[in-house]
Image 1 (spheres, rainbow, N blue to C red):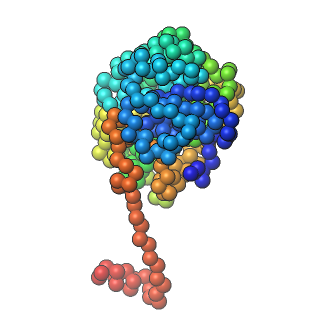
Image 2 (cartoon, one colour):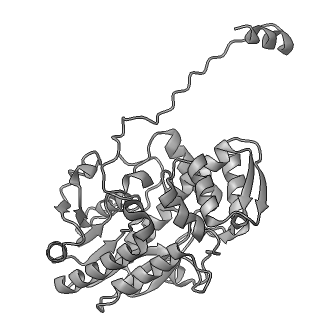
Image 3 (cartoon, rainbow, N blue to C red):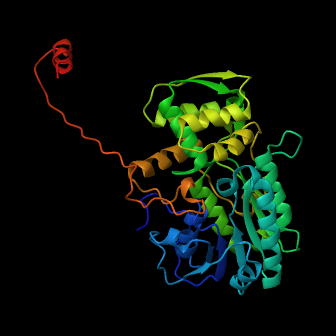
Length: 366
């Protein structure tokens, strides 16, 4: 059933062609597939573990084809991409391999590019990260650039989207932000909280990912995408507290918290594991804002501001309508939707004729 929140794509019943999606069990891929189906595309997914798609409401869609294979199985991947007009590469190895993820990601991207060439694929679409190249670029963001290079290594045109923090219910970055603000009224933070970023709503990411298929001029282009606001992380924390109905958080930046200590801090306070928190924390030192307007020139779109994006994400959590989560992206199937995490609130009201002090005294005796 469509969400009450506006869909990121326009609905159509026409056959727009066949597209290939890797990472369909992950956070972005798990939302992109239904968006593509809704837009009228036929979709072929490559998954290692088809059981992870069993509970997805779109699993039985007549225009969906699921192929079971590993990205390392080059011949199987090439066969699966036959007759596809484009392939989305939405794979990373941070959850599966931890500290060796950069090498693993380069290897997988190189193999995918070769398979795409063998299949005669017209184009690849990749979602990477914003950030200026230089000595200060984090290992995580550098890895994203290296994946871009590997995907383009066989000559197939690659459309690369570069995004900063994605705001959406269930994304790792969003959950880190939410848990820190919910649990810590006073935060002694690394100095990266003053770094400027341009977060983008997951709905806007999906819009551009789908839209580029019908805009030939995007083929082979690098496209920076971001929301309507560029602001420091501490301002995001202030907005999050406001949307959660909490008091303004006291934030005390200090210069001595290393990425390792930041990661341990995030792991202690949030459900995000150290192996995910470490590369994300390292990337927070880099300014990540849109500096090129090619995306808006080719695909004009009014993106959401940070506050509205956070508001919509929290509304989905409140309605228990979170389609995908960062935690399901690993090789092992995650918990089913009914396995826990639900919050039940019992709220009762009664009007009595008494002063507040007397009421409070009576409550304390319960």
